[in-house]
Length: 331
View 1 (tube, rainbow, N blue to C red):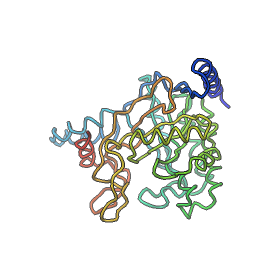
View 2 (spheres, rainbow, N blue to C red):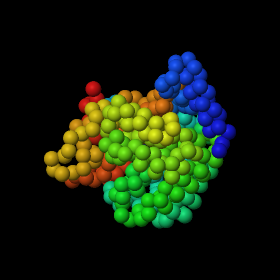
View 3 (spheres, rainbow, N blue to C red):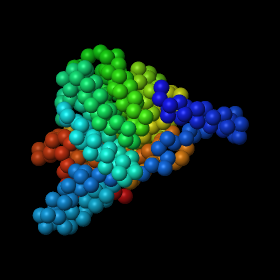
View 4 (cartoon, rainbow, N blue to C red):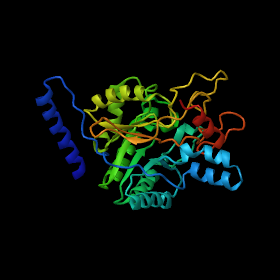
């Protein structure tokens, strides 16, 4: 276990002892936030920033200005291609120059998205782990917050992807990925744990997270590309944290301004480019003592969930009209 994680564990234990002495039996003091004091990095080359530049160059200043509430904010960079080196290096080095913290998402596992709208990824587990090593080496000693494989653990636990095969093999692969990333002192690693509407059994989910290397990670992530309210995520996250012995977590608040949408009357998945959702609160680091250590835009608002309806862009492609709608519907 790395020195930083030992120190965090010692700090949490000390806080528990101090809180018990100061507050009496039955209290559950919040642990120190390892991200406290960090500033999230804004990528000048994010999809929203590039779309804004293109609109301005085309003479549409009104639409370009309209994207400002997204382009001005820190969003995660998704690593999805076979060679992530150049992108991972650009992001982490640029953030380091600014003394800020970038957020990266690893999304390249075999059988990604159950072969649905975001299908792709590595061909097999060995090539996936070689890919993760490439990412870890590209980050090197720069500070970075890394989200590991959105949906992978809940999908394996629920048996959602028949092609994934043995869930235990998926957990072992993710655990190996955590070890590769966590070998670097300044990499904060968060295993994805789905969202409040997915796995109801927190004990089962905690077991799957443990099998996936949670003890060697910094925590877990919630609500990636989803819409549950921040309050619902914190209630769910605190319960899962308790099942994991107090582990901390981050929440995706990019599109949860109005909470989860109603089912689509046309029978299209409610999570796929729904019309009744809105931009959430701006990204921020949580309090100095917290279980929810950061509220992030992990999904870039305006990036398509997939071509679920006629005329909608492929998954991951930035869609200015959708981005503007998310902004306009923000309360």
